[in-house]
Image 1: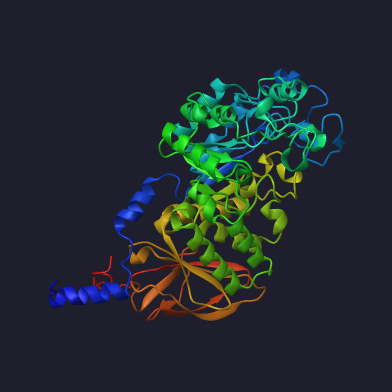
Image 2: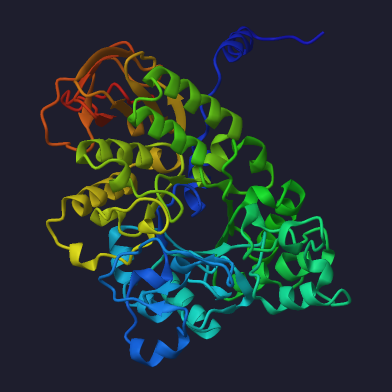
Length: 521
């Protein structure tokens, strides 16, 4: 018969009632992983910085391609029947890897940890989602050697580099597809799904005739993409890439995503594979390191636009993070805008609403994705308007959007809980509120959002047992402001201005050297 001492019995009873907090080593390990809570800066190479060699490069843009003036915004085009694409896909602005390198200091000084590039491989269009050869760099952008130099320059600044992998399809004009389509005995025939049962003669991505899908069931295709030592995924990781963002990852399927992720990790341990998963993310995270978190984006936008109540938004957030797991959520990209969806300044022209949303982007679990120019207030609707060239004319010291973005970046850099902390809801009805917390009580951050057009006052319950009674709460985005807020027995009454997200931090009260937290942290 097993005997228990009285202390052991007491500890057993306590353990049955209360879950122990995460140990410090958990958060320390999370901090060591660059993928957790990173700030990602996204760039379209053609649209970011004009090339200094533009005149010498003009021959790379033969008709019907057009080289536009940098001051011209991107505009809708017309469908070109012969080319099976839209004329806007052939408008170029002339940026390249060398010109991008001249602005790495800007990206670094903004505070980005990761530079993410939309596709750069050899392709016909400006967006490069119609590859001819994944292993070659499109000449408008540069060469493989210039890619290696860019990667070295990025790493020299302490940042990481992530590439866009478009492994669901290639381009209709790619030599492999052209030969496969024309010759039934072609060695490339089984690289695609070709037959009379498909409109246009081949299976294409969501009806776009310029984008024939790859047959991933063919082992040779998988070897080319990620399986072989000289494959696309492994080769670029060897040359300096630190990870892959997978385009239309939900199209690839769970087994092949698992294989690709394993191959990337084998080639470069600690590399990142993040999938463009527009589905609910939970099960996909068994096959990927992370997702582009469109589901969390839907919750934030629904809250901001009045389509979801704060209480419903809170329940959805908690369910999503619980189902997905906090570890992959910390690595997942918190996307508000990018090249496929309208820019945040278009969605929220009012600066107060925009700032409210961006504060949530930088405080919810994940890696905030800054789409180039968002920090300068660039606007633009859907594709192609959201892909206009970078507005360097807006780069001024007093640009309010830039000042706000830098403040959010600094907030995240300063507070460990926002980068690697756990997530817990704050009990509330009229506001959207949550905690980010670690094993150190005073690192806790309380995030409280009021999406309404008028101020809201409400009494909140913060279910954090390590936060002591009579603890002042300070506005982390305005720490010098006088704050009458005090946490008492886990409760506090707050008034949140209209369309505002508060970020509150507990501060130890000055008591002549005495600390209520002496045995907590």
